[in-house]
Structure formats: C-alpha cells, structure tokens
Amino acid sequence: MIRIAIISPILAPEDDYRSKYRLRDCTGIPAEFEFSYIKKGPRFILNAYDDALAAPALLRKVLEYEKRGFDAVVINCSADTALRACREAVRIPVIGPTESTMLYAMQLVEQFCVLTFTKKINNRFHRIARELGIEERLCEVSSVEIDFSEISNGEERVVNALYREIQELYERTGCDGYILGCTDFEDLAPQLNEKLRENGMDVVIFKPFEISAYQAYMTVAMGLRQGTDSYPRSQIQI
Image (cartoon, rainbow, N blue to C red; front, side):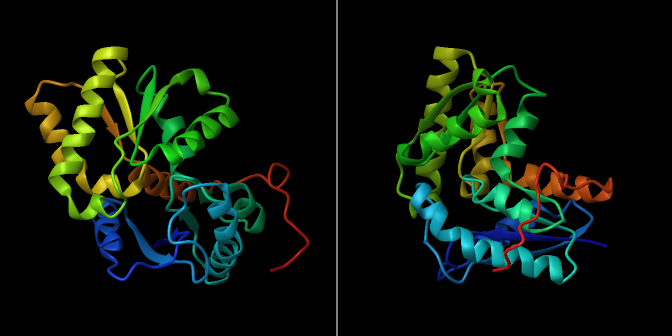
C-alpha cells in the first residue's frame, strides 16, 4: 500500500485534534497516512521568518520519511514551507497544499479568491501565485481576522465570518471559486457548504489539504516525481 507522510511544520499543539480531522479527509484514499509535527521551530507560520525557522527541522523530517520507505510527503501548511528545498532533499514527491490547490482550481473556475484568518499571511498567496505565473487568475485574498485559536473553538462564529466574506466577494467580483487559506478551516467546510447552499450561493470551495493528499496519492500511483534537473540534490547533508 502507498504510504504518505503528512508533516505540519510547527510544534505539536497540546491537543492534537487536527490529525483526527485530517485523517477523516483521507478516508477515500487507498493509502496509509502518518501525521507528524517538527520538534524544533515556531508554533505558527505567519511570515518568512517563521518559515525559515521551520525549514531545518522540516527537512530532517522529510529525509527521515524517505529513509523509512514512505512514498510521498505533504507539507501541511498553506505557506508551502520550504517546498523547493524539500523536493531537492529527496526523490519521493513532496506536495505543497497551496501550489497544488491553485493549479487545480484553475481547471474548474476562471478566477479564485483565498480566504485567510489574518491579513498577516495574505501576501504569501500573492507570492505563490506570482511564482506560478498565474497571478491574473487570483481574484483577491481576503481575511476574516479571527484569532487562530478560534478556528477550532468558535465554530459557528468562524463559519458565519467565512460565509459573510464569500457573500461580499461574490457580490462584488462574481468570483465563484474560494480556496480555504488555512488547512484548519477545512474542518468547517461541511457547515460552510451547507450555509452557502441554504442561501442559494453556487460557489466552489477548495480544500487544500484534501487536494494535496489526493495529489500525493495520484503522483505516486502514476509513478511520477520531481525532476532531478528541476530540483537538483544538495551535496550537503543535515
């Protein structure tokens, strides 16, 4: 069976409810999943500084999973933390949720918006879209300005905030594709989709973790991986 490692590039929280929800999203994929966190790094990835702090421990984790015989890695963070470096470190596929979701969304909608929990992380999505050469397909990045801890504790409030943001964006821009710009938002996707349907809003909600997990599986199943010239292996071992 295909084995896929899911690495969150942050320190493990005291209550690891996230792995339970992520596992639920993977139930339709015929693969074995293992979830883990890094042992040294930030508690959240809010900027490039946090990203850099997380990179060394993340690289060690990716190398460890390759040595253990895993077939692919998913970086469970919308920053796509150290994605290129991780691909250069190993020969197994490494998937970033934001990159994979933006490219996937382009097949289904003309433009898409990204919804975040704080405007502090909004620029990462503009940067990733720019690096992919698809910035014209990114309609807008908008934040609901909710404390990260509320995503799990304030369920109804978060769903309502996301709904209002989508409603405003849809009425103003006509954009019908919305990427959840925090993988923890995905826990609330069923409630959000229900509220959208109840109010007659026919839009597409993209769940980056779920999309990246499926992409990791499909990449392995098709026998694909990153190219060695595109991602040359470093001679330095960490």
